[in-house]
Length: 179
Length: 149
Image (cartoon, rainbow over all chains, first blue to last red; front, side, top):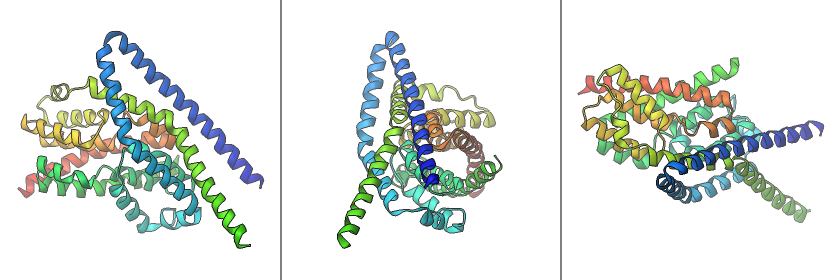
């Protein structure tokens, strides 16, 4: 019971710390906007419009990720996590991280909270890195990539990228283990 | 008994989604900051600015391509379009590959969000390794294509 309370207190403290950091960061960016507005008001208006457009575009993905996080909170428990993407997940875990990374969509930063949630429940850090790396491979964009660079280039590049993602995951695990 | 179970289940669902909202809400200021930074980037950094920094030296251009891709941000489509334009201007495939790979694997603009949410050590290590791997991938890809074709 005490252990649970300590974990909850720790979680709250960490959330508070993260929120403070986020507010400082957002404050700094707003300050940059104000500063640049003094010299280039038109460019800043364009920047705000670009940010607004981006924000509107990501709203559906935000709701999708919050929904996914809710589902993960409800259905996924540390036992399931350790089975599929935990320390003892083996090759299945790597394949799952690669395939979900490739299939996931939306901006990368929107996935950070979900990955943190999964890691807190026992997901291996190496697999988090593998997931993030494979997000670089976007299936809907492949035709465009082929149009610009040719199919041979795309196939060769994708094979190397998947290999690199595994290398990155392994290095990350070694580095984070030793630290 | 069954009704109690049903109520408990309902409560668990609500708690799960409340926690999801709460966790996302904590990350919201950083995410808004990143979106505002992306707006600045789109306005202040043009395609011409990007293509003007290449030198014509293979290794140097590969590193430059990787650096520009790392500090750039936005949809991957943009990186393909710029990459295609760079190839037309005779920039090497090594540099263009490094550019499009780091565009999607290294995130200097997203770094504050990644560090705040997943941890500074994790974010720093991941981005550094991704940068090095992007250079190796570009060398391997361009060399493989030279051998194949």
